[in-house]
Amino acid sequence: MFTGLIEEMGTITALDPSGEGALVTVAASLVVEDVSHGDSISVNGVCLTVTESTTSHFVAEVMKETLQHSTASTWISGAGVNLERAARVGDRLGGHIVQGHVDAESTILSVTPGERWSVIRFSLAPDIAPLVAHKGSITLDGVSLTISAIGRDWAEVSLIPETLTATTLGSKNPGDVMNLETDMIARHVLRLQEFAPEGSSA
Image 1: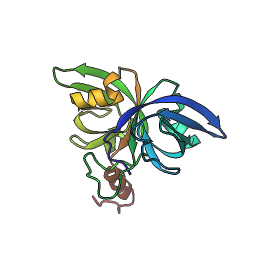
Image 2 (image 1 turned 135 degrees about the vertical axis):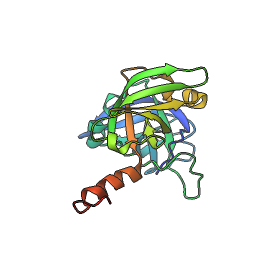
Image 3 (image 1 turned 60 degrees about the horizontal axis):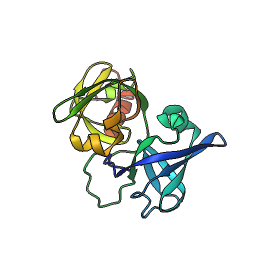
Image 4 (image 1 turned 90 degrees about the horizontal axis):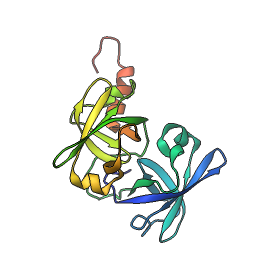
């Protein structure tokens, strides 16, 4: 489990085929300080398992499923990524509960700079839109954010200066694609509704 509070930006140095999946190598400094084999690290919102590490990088497995349903398949050497180690029991939950299970890819529709912040509008697929609510939580490329405006097929988040400088979201442009994870509670509520008796609102 993660909180969506990015610890550092790393750099992809390699994405090598491995069976039906791949092995990704990420240059980093902070998240590798106490990492061990088998630990989880969120890479742009994707929960990956560390297979080896040094003081300057780590290697993680990327499953076929992940390559098919996230931006992981487009990672190239030199690309910046948001990194977060798995939360420990007792840590402050500064963001929200993030699983690192990407629901969909989302395309940036517009970026509107402000005097103190920037607003990103991004697309919502029809099956994702019901899970996103105004003032609700969402994860974009691993970053915990609050929905500031919403439509039927789009939503917006407002990025403070800290988010713009401490994550890759500050360099995003219209047309860029991000990993999107909806709020875990919203997913469960929607699933429960599928089994509610006909005519029931629960």
